[in-house]
Image 1: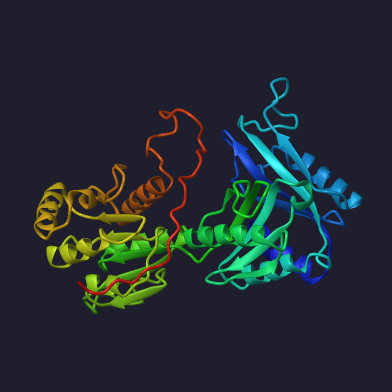
Image 2: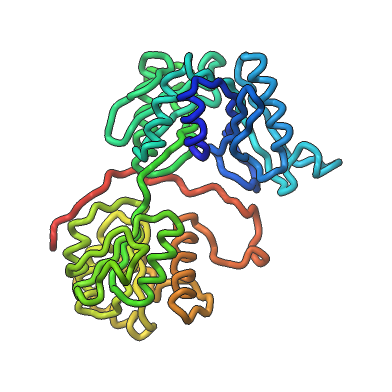
Length: 384
């Protein structure tokens, strides 16, 4: 639902009831991920998309019906039609489970409060029950980063805290996904499937080396939604004018800057200096941090020498195996802009466990399940 949070926030402020249709499960290929929503108000205005067009008409009519009836939530599956692929089904061959429910802001003020947090940019998680006891389906509670349950309730008991704990962990990981709680003697007698919608702070891209490649990479990182930092020890090169797409430009020794920076499992560290004076202390630290990606630019000869120096500095083999060097995918890139595409392509592939192969040469579903999140609080480490 957070893909249309701004509009929903506006409707809630106007106390305007609406029907909300949310993708709660995906099997095989599907154009949009779990958590994506469409909403329809009483005047027939619609916002959002859940299928890129395949089933929008059917979902729209179902929303109108649910909004008119004001009844219990409906869960519907849309799949591929062998008789007519262009009937109510997905031409991509996948299956979508969609939960459609009526939202009345006057009765459910907790959702309006959560959407207000999202609209103001606060990291927020909304946990929505999508399977379990009938009376709980569609109910939700919300948490904010670092906080306790702030809005809504499920059963007013142990279930709330179980779901809130899962929501906090996924908020730290920056991942929207489904989780199952209860049914195992932990205070929640019946199992619940909960879809946790996450609006997280932007992941970080830390670029070291104020070179032309860094300028192009900072623009690409900005386009992908990263909070971009460019760092270089040379003040003549590390200037705001040279890096207009960076959120911050830092003049400092790279390893010292990294040691003072909060990172998490979504952070991408890109080392573009290919100068051992900077690279070795920086990479020694970066490879020991719980970041999502560490890459370093340089020729294969530079890479071999870099590995030797890092090994001599005491970096274990298992950490060296996590270094992406030479950085980027083999796209035949030459210009800074092409190289930025190569690097970001590798980051995307690594993050989502993609193969990096052309889709025409790969097999299996195009949209594979994402890897499980690695919850963890941001960390800061002392200068070694």
